[in-house]
Image 1 (cartoon, helix red, strand yellow):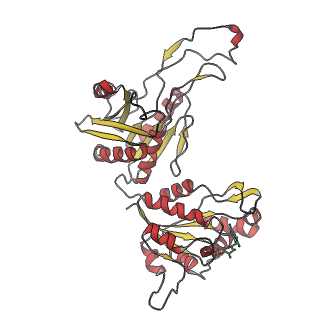
Image 2 (image 1 turned 180 degrees about the horizontal axis):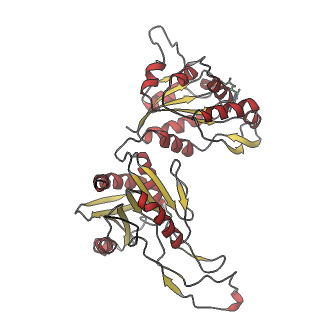
Image 3 (image 1 turned 135 degrees about the horizontal axis):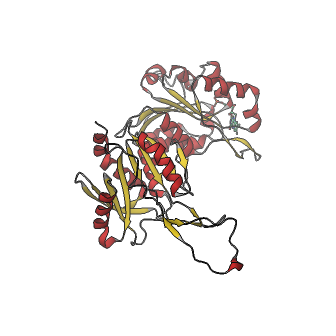
Length: 400
Ligand SMILES: Cc1cc2nc3c(=O)[nH]c(=O)nc-3n(C[C@H](O)[C@H](O)[C@H](O)COP(=O)(O)O)c2cc1C
């Protein structure tokens, strides 16, 4: 279990999104109890939350004489996190003032863990000094505010106040939970995506990597309780709740690894780094009228082999994309050449798998002799399986 969460739902038009937030938290392994305001039930039904979470979903403090409703004090004692989605202007103002006149706001006072709110309202309400001040008060007390974004609002106007994306809310909530899970407290650095090397001011050499495998690893490691950092190449979307730094070239990535690898317990080096780069980028934009030309390439330093490590730490996992016929032979050689602890070998010549696709199959080998095959599956599931398979070796490698 990743953590115990109380999901508060208040009466805004974005209340239906709270269902998706609930799904995201449950999928990540959280137990979620929902408390809705009376006004929220104008938009969503408590039963939806109860069924999807298999936990309680309450509206009133006084449900029935035989059912005492929310035992807010007991629930507050055992919950790690309160997430309010959407947080209406009304609920924000009440929380800031310490008003407890319904089940949700009473619970908010009894809650002892961290608090995340995701406000959503009309632009005028969001800019109202009373609400600006209430948000500032809550932030000052440690509440994490997932800022609303600009967009098309329910009233038909474009402006600030739209609920933040569900992925972001789930990511921030998970990052706010105390570390728990098979990788709790393990610092994992993930590299993902392609590099881009300049030919001139507008043209580049790159590769077909989508960064999906690396991104899935960062996401799965986050959900398994790890303290994750992502180094992401061009085109790779950030992972909510995971600090992300960007690289463009292999040299950029080398600098980031120089800074971040020594802080990590494990590096999952899934980025597809260029092997060659143009010997020097041409200034400006090369003109077609110049006719053809030879592009001189020079090798790029091998980032996996030169990963900054001391006494074998961090635990280094590399990826080997090879032809299926000699997959494991090449992967084993690569692991030895780069002094890696583990190699994830995957084929480059099987249709529908690997680079640019959502699925992959893999064989994992470790220096300590573990070998495991993974059948073709989506990269999210594969990432979780890979992390769990190597969790034991990773955790053991942290011990001096
Ligand atoms: C159709 C409709 C949509 C609403 N949407 C929002 C909203 O997005 N954000 C907000 O702060 N209030 C919104 N309100 C106003 C709240 O429902 C109202 O302030 C209510 O008192 C909030 O109660 P609660 O905070 O206890 O849920 C909306 C009202 C209506 C009628």
